[in-house]
Image (cartoon, rainbow over all chains, first blue to last red; front, side, top):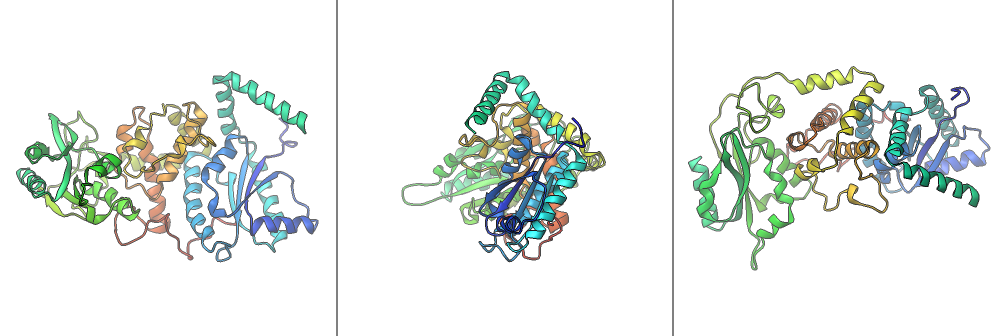
Length: 166
Length: 294
């Protein structure tokens, strides 16, 4: 694949109260930022289970962004404090297992920081672009479908069906 | 040894405890766990360097707890625990899985254990956790037996391995762990043997939605091992039972130890050491580092 033309797939888990609203502000203010991030809104950064992130990588994400309210700004008072400790360990674990630290990034973005949201998405996209596609993890998918070829067919069929319905 | 048997017998005769969980000799250099309810069986108890099992895993089992509940009262449970097993018990108490007043901890002055059954006790065959052990005397106990002896010296091979892995590039590490996890047959022995894997229903058993693929192909194995390691990070007390139970020799405790090192470095926290402090991941501090976040 042409590395210049390749666009990374980024999954952004954002909290409903701050970052999602910040993204909304970026949109209504007509700010420009890369369209690589696919946003998934959750109620709190503390409610993001690390298996969500593993699942994102499994399904072909090249990078993941997790974003929530600033400390002491959490809608649920302590959600992001709990998350902060957890992410510290998860980030360190993935690093030890061999996943580059830039693949999983974290940020605090408040509802009024539309500019920061655009900047963070741009930064994450740039970081992932320099790293290149996450082929190591994607290779596992190809081996998975090699073991279960029938699944490959099912996946193809569902993709075709989805396209037809759209 | 006689004192231990006498004490266990006394506890059972006086009906202070419903059962004593301990070790019994199977053959030379090999012991197995035993649950004693009859005072006459107390003579079967032993304690030596070949008592490897971490018996605290039984404390959260429903069948064991049912033994303690009679019609009119709830009885205590006595458990034989090496000083390192006491850490697991402390972690269980911290996480409200066991109540301190519900158990009688019978502990020992420990000078190390062998790495697996079938080895002679010596510095060379010392279990990896014993090399760096600092608690030869238990931190919490109700009764203590055994005399203090010197632990044989050995080099810390696990730490050297971690440092070696850290010096590798991410691609090399990913390949190494992928090859290791690829061996996994999803027997879940690591989960069954871990005292801190007490969830009634593990996330891998949940089918709707299926977060972790249960068939043992590379992708499912990778997810399972990440989740297992993450759920134990900052909680694992380093008893090393997962390593011993793994039939495929995946270096599980290596990852656990790396995460324990992170807990010590960033939060100066060691799991299962104090009944007074809350667990690290179960609590928070507003002054925690914000370095990770943009």
